[in-house]
Image 1 (tube, rainbow, N blue to C red):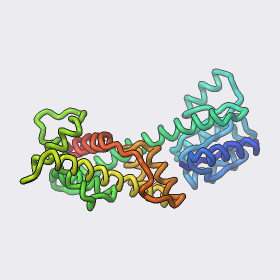
Image 2 (cartoon, helix red, strand yellow):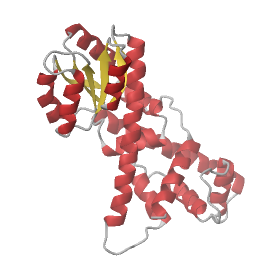
Image 3 (tube, one colour):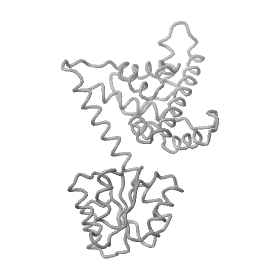
Image 4 (cartoon, helix red, strand yellow):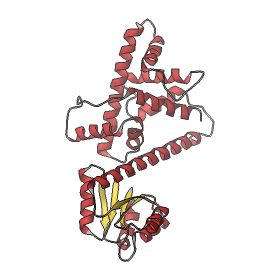
Length: 293
């Protein structure tokens, strides 16, 4: 995530920048010592989060926020302040402040607040991407052509770069089976039952043995998705595929761990947790959402 810091205290700006860097929360794209000097660079760079001091000469924090919003800024605001006046704090929240960071700066508090802000940002991005994706599905063609379940799943797996993996066919088959159920529920059956159902759709196979093979193929395919998305994140943290799929289909800490391993040039065999149930659960829900449109 990209942060912009507005504070007339240089030491405060440096401390916030240090926490952001050392805690690997993103990077500081710019800074300013007051609201007047902050307007132009914030509007031109559109950072994700603005950390802004409450009391500053010229334009105070709230006045700066109001001007930024009036001129089209849509990022999040975190207020930095020593103020404990409830009325002023209430006004700040009404104007759109997400959280407060209290002075003097406390590393633990800053880290906690920025992590919460990051979670909110990722959730909003995911919801926005879903809305845009669903809107585009209905607007792609003039003819109301219904996509098949297999086409929907192939499109999602292709976005993650794993459509060519051996387990992708197994994943597609499982999604097809789930969508054929008479009564659909958000919760998946046990994984073992899914593997056996997929195996029964194959000719002349030992169900028990093939079920285990399906599990291993799917596990390797999901690991490939982790590696692909982590590589995208290392190259471009704002990649649409990375921003959408990484936090939605995986525990983001696992993706971040893989990114760190890639940055440190560690072998791809380094251990990464694979949550098959979560991956298939999210894929099933998204497939169902797209299919009913």
